[in-house]
Image (tube, rainbow, N blue to C red; front, side, top):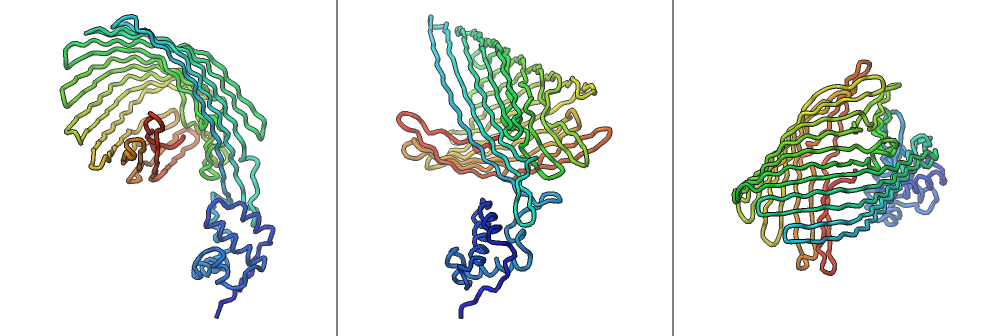
Amino acid sequence: MAKQIEINIQESESELKTLLNQQTKLLQYQRAKALLLIKQGKVIYTYQLAKKLKRERKTIYNWLKLYKNEGIVSYLKIKSRGSRKTQITEEVKEANYTFKLDYTKPYSENFTIETGAQYVLNNVSNDYEVQDLVGNIFVSNPNLTNIFEFDQNVLGLYGTAAYEGDKWGIKIGLRLENTDLNTLLANTNKQNNQSYTNLFPSFHSSYKVSDSYSLQVGYSKRVYRPRLWDLNPFFNIRNNFNIRTGNPELRPEFTDSYEITNIYDLGKISLNFGIYYRFTTDAIERRISTFENNINTYKPLNIGTTKATGVEFNTKYNVAKWLVFNGDLNYNTFKRQGTFNTTEIDFKADQWAGKLTSKLKLPTQIDFEIIGNYISGTKTVQGKIAENLFVDLGLRKKIIKGKGILSFSVRDIFESRIEKNEVIQDNFYLFNRNQRGRFITFSFSYGFGKGEAMEYSGQRRR
């Protein structure tokens, strides 16, 4: 005998329709749909509801039992953040365009001049909405909701002159860049426009001492431009007491880099050992906290300068045709100087990082890679960050005569990449622990014409 549904739906039909439209996951959507069908009288028996939703009768029975015992919040699995019930939706639309023109003129066997231009357009719209549960309906919170528009256009002109002899080589370059950045916070109509033009000189020289040893020296000026996520005022609300915001007024940081590198080629083993000095102005401090009313709000800020002196070592060992090891080690000491509010910043610290990569060529054109990473703890402007140890792996297989590539990657296999940050100030202390967890990607790429398929890195967009 068919079992008739006996349940009292507390929500009105209009409330259920609103909840149904708000669901972004199939499970929650079907659960809301089940209540709406019952409320509308379109189903009377459990088997009818199971058939409409293509679910087992036992599953429908368990759903309705959960609703009857715990109500709509638990039934739809609405998560609690702090003292309120909230849900967050985010939609990102992005368009990137690159126009490039290069010209190369060899004047002799040893001397070459290159020149060119590049125009890069990056347009992003980030629609971010926070909704609070009021009664049984989610209502948009205007204080935490925004549409953030990010438009950045970079025009670059460059020229290089290179000489390459039997023993000695030199390359001198100059790049002119103009950056136009416009951001708009739609809900407040707050705009931030930046336009700046900069010259980036570079110089590199190498000398081959012997067949197995050469020496390189170099200088370059670099720029790091804030990304969308650095500028967006409402990017991440971890909970009601720990809010991460961007900073629309964040400026780019510029670095002058000087390097001396020793290169050894010993057959199956290659070794690079270098020392460097880097001076950064308008240095970006990623996490500056203010603590008011028991709420931690943090954002990136430009604070003074950073002077870093370090050593870098990397090696490659070709054990066999099917096995290669790569190792990287970097250690530096740095000095931070600047002013934050009315406080003078002046301290020294150090940090080191290491990476070991193993690459294996397996049968049937499969490449396997596993990477171990370590980043030490260090001091920050307001406190300190803890060390980090994590492992990534990847598999890649070429198919369709090399035109297609199947890629599989796992970032942070053991879920050990845990970010720990301490803020130690005279009037407050904060400890933050963040774990993103394991990140798995699978991708396929295909190259048309004479082009080759591109590999997907599996990295997060941040």
